[in-house]
Image 1 (spheres, rainbow, N blue to C red):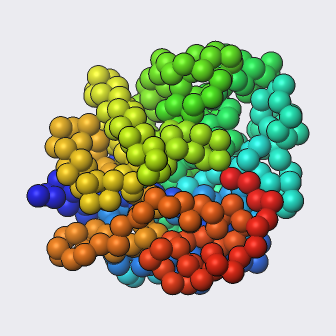
Image 2 (cartoon, rainbow, N blue to C red):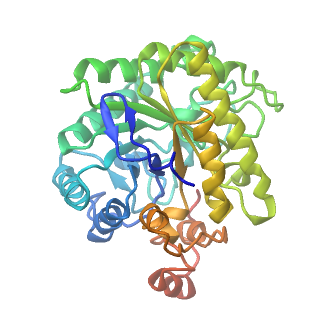
Image 3 (tube, one colour):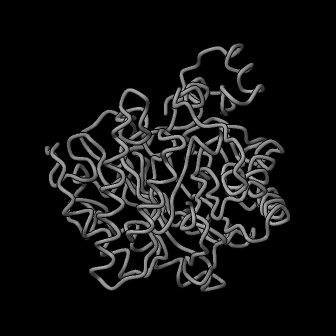
Length: 393
């Protein structure tokens, strides 16, 4: 019944044991300036034991100025040993797991209580406008952090361009900067294009996986998936060009998502009252796969937004894989509710399904460690005792 999900796959030159992807979900539990904590390490080792073929480690910021969570992970030479320990723990738990690090910068989603909010787009009041040179330095920081991820032993990286963060903000039609980073399509894609090209030239091993998570449509005027700064209506013309650029650059995968958490949240992670939003994700995933197929490209496509479906996710995932509309299936909140989901499914054991209650997001919004408040007693108690904060997603 679930044969496709458990088939081996290939991402670049790497073989995966199955088609399950553990999507990046921030835990907000780093220590000592962005180092990997023991709870963070345990989380990913548990996922590896649980049988996830691909694990994407939650948003790893390129600097202290790039955080979206106060206790978020930061990639630096100083913190490298902690990331090496994380990789070692995951590989010890399951040597066949493909481990990707998501590299990110919060941009204007940063919180002014612990870092400066920085904006790319002129004409808004959501953060200080970055200079041309500052954006160049952030691009270089993405490359440096990615190379450190390779040094740490990760199998690859996710060059984050989704959910309203820096990498997504810069490619939007809303970005009307008059320098080399904005205005024209060529300028708006320069950050990603040059970043990936630099990584390809500098990585030690050409098997090191390069890919990106993107928001196909963000759901607000001038966002990704529209065609002008004042447009709201979905038009994927530019996103199709973006997929074509990815194929031309030779990236190994694209992780398809949508929306902006905290702004158009139900698009990103459908909740019980907006469950049918998952259908948009299926469409976006197929759109990306069809675009790559038309180009004769073997870029692998990850789908998203399956957690809200509970047990119904598995036959839908099988259909998407069987019809060639997706190559991998990603779960986000479900990895918190039951890290052993693939293993339990394979064994026919009961699974603790995500209830789409948004309790994990609530903890993150309050600025404390995040996890499942339904199935995990520790986080259930934490939710009862926590106090509100000014943190923003």
